[in-house]
Structure formats: structure tokens, C-alpha cells
Image (cartoon, rainbow, N blue to C red; front, side):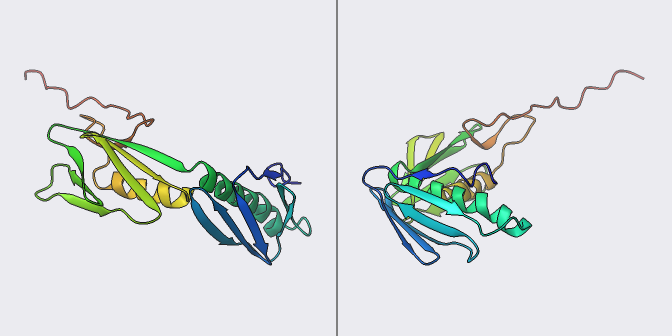
Length: 181
């Protein structure tokens, strides 16, 4: 039995879960998320607990069991607490700013790079070198943060670029000066 898949999911107060066949809908204070699960996996709600079961021990069902349980648990946590990713902009002249509902990055290119905020993703820029991305869908928040980081990933020589706050950049030495003849 899957160690993750067999764990029940507790539904916190203020969160409503609806299961219609293989479609799971979770509504909460931070929004509403819907996901269709694989036809082999059974999702049941009993009071304030959701359980995920599989029909047999085939490899496909075993792999889907833990995955489905984790995805539903992430949906429940997302609509109740939400998810955030914090990014840091390092480098001389590198900065981030919020212009209306757009994130504007000035990171050494001849033009600023912009990202639009949408219904699922909220962007905050508390300082010129800090970006906070938040939302209820864990995958969308992580994907958006990865796309922002991809504009100028941190480089190992001077550490310039956009990095996650908890990310460690392994620094390298530059070329050593060559001695005489």
C-alpha cells in the first residue's frame, strides 16, 4: 500500500469539497480548484475526511494512488492557505517593479521584461529586489515563478540574476591570472 496514498486528507473549516464521479472540486476562501482524477482511482468523502483508494496493486494504479492523494491535498491546502514563492533580484542596476497589474523586470537587457498578473496569480513587489508570487494552485504558482526566474537565471561568477530566496548559488572562481614566462 502506498504510504502517501493511504493517508486521509482532513478538510479544514471553510473548505467545501464536491466529488462528482471522477471530478473533484474544492472551494475555499482563496478560490476554487477542479481536477479530474484517473478512472481507476476512487475518491470518497466521509464527513471532513477524504480518502483515496485504488482497485489493485498494478504498477499504474500504485503510481496514481499517491499522486492523486497529493494533488487533492495540495488543492485543499491551496484554497485554504494558498501558496507563495519569493524571488530575489541580484545585480547592479537589476530591479523589479509593479506597474498596474504587470511585473516589470529591468535585468540588463536593452528593454524591460514584463509579465501580466492573472486571476490565478497575484504579484507583489515590496522592494526593488524582491518579488512575491502567490496563488491557490501550487503548480501555477511554481510555473510562473520558474518563468520569471528563467528571464535571467543566477550566474555562478558574480551571483547576478533572479533566484529563489532559499536557493543557494555555488560560486566559482574566475580565471586565475597567468604567471610570467
